[in-house]
Length: 130
Image (cartoon, rainbow, N blue to C red; front, top):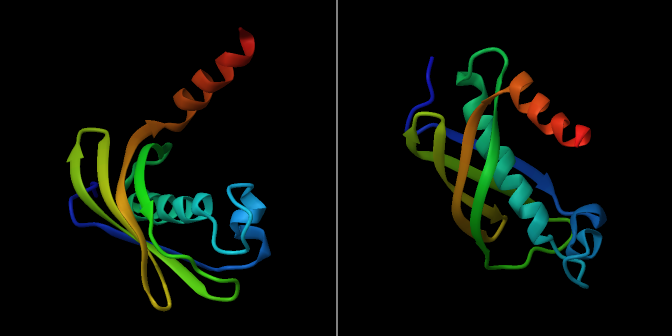
């Protein structure tokens, strides 16, 4: 198996008090927060790739460029979809789009890289050693 252009992913949730702009401290209103929309987009993206990776590999998000175009109130279902548009070695580009029950609420592009879990975690832990 390998990661290829066209692979798709999806993630969904219901807007509640814990994923609002207020909860994220990204705004004062009780609507779906942009940081949570971005996280949902990243979830859809990594889920589309994970089944095609070798054991001991993961992907990490490195770039996200999106717009959040429509507010979603508490109680409404939201979901994100991703589609791989380009694969360059370990670099993967995806189109990401978020929706609520009335239509599209955000869209943009996302970049992820395939990493070896142990090597990645060791490098991160190295920051603690100074």
